[in-house]
Each structure stands twice: as C-alpha cells, then as structure tokens.
Length: 286
Image (cartoon, rainbow, N blue to C red):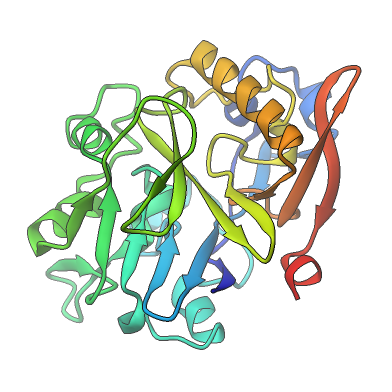
C-alpha cells in the first residue's frame, strides 16, 4: 500500500462560522483571519494505492459552480484535484473508488463535472464506484433547512443516475473494519448525520482522516465546535471520546481542512487533549 496526499484546492470560510460561540480573540491565535474575517482552509484528500485499487477519500468542492458561488468561498492558491492526481502518477480514469466522508459540497463537489458541452453533469471518475452510506445519502437528498445550502443536487444526482453509487453498512459505535474498502470506519453524527471517519493502517501507524470531526488544529479543544455542526452537544461528546482514544492509541490525524498542518499527533495535558506535533506527510512517511 502507498498513500498520496491529494490537494484539491484551498478556499476561505468565515472564522466565526468555523468556531461558533468561541470568541475571536481565542480562535485567531491558531486561525488568523483576513480583513473580511475569513480564515484559510484546505481541501486535502487522500489517495490509497493498493495492488488492485486506487481509493480516493473526498474530492474537494470542484470548480463547476458559478462565479457568484465562489465569491462566497474565496478560492486561493494553485492546487487542483485533477492535477494533484496526475502529479501522484495517475489519471482520473484509474481511480477505482471514491469514498465520501459526507456529502457537503466542499467534500464531494469535485467528484462531478460538466461534460464538454456544459449541458450535462457527470462523474469525474468514470470507472469508479462512489461510496456513501444509506442513512447519510437519504439525509442529503432530503436536506433540512440548516444544511440545504451544503447538500447540492448537482453533486449528488449525477452519481446516483450513473449507477456508480454504493453504500457501506452503518454500525453504532467505534471504528469497524470494512472488507470492501480495506480500512476502519467510525460513524459520527454531530456535524451531520452519519459522517464517516476512515482509519488506515499504514507503515506501522494508525492514520485517521479527520474530515470535519477535527477540521483544523484550532478545533482540538473539546468546546471548539463549528457553527456548521447540526448537533453541537453531540459533536462535543463524540470529539471528547475520539480525542482520548487518539492519544491513548497514538493515532496520526490526516488533516483535510487545515491548510498549514498536514498530519498531527495529540497529547494529554492538564487543560485536556492538545496538539503534540505537526508533520508534513512526506517527512513522516517517506
């Protein structure tokens, strides 16, 4: 097995929305904002290469939306999903599986593109199976008012209509191994219903794709919950359990949304679990 970080494109989000009730004077220490109160975000995906499969975890937001859409998200930097996959030595047609942690547009939008005529939306990865879970899929295609702006039909319906949609079975607690994909999955419900957190055994370490359970290093303290989370108290409970488990089991967290920290470890302190070390992926797994 070999793992490749895939940079799908950076963007910005409102710092207040990303930290909810946490005062700016606290969160700006780790996530400084610009003059518009926007903080820098990453879209770091994970490509798992095995002898038989190429599995992409999440796909960023893509670039098919309107100019008006992107005025809200301030894309910055030169990263691009397809170029990053090419730079890893592969083409999009070689991807066998796309696993979405959840279906908010910034995690799945890159998986669907316009055709050449811009008349039809289609899966970017034409030879891949696209993985979600049934409960989350139903949650996404029948969105509640709070999440409607994050679950976009143009990202979802082309996948189901193409026949490439697959579901993993859900379970109630803890990481559980999925035979189809070859890694463990934890289901969490605070951010959105049945978000999936993958854990991959890689080069003697447990590598956890943090997704929106721990978006950035600034979100490590238990009460630092995003305003986007649908169930903040559930998020806090899930995060508290996960943080303790992560320290006790020496998990390495692969940071999807932290533009400046690729992989981190955690430690227990008198104030609770906090950042231990930050690594680049290459220095840790070269």
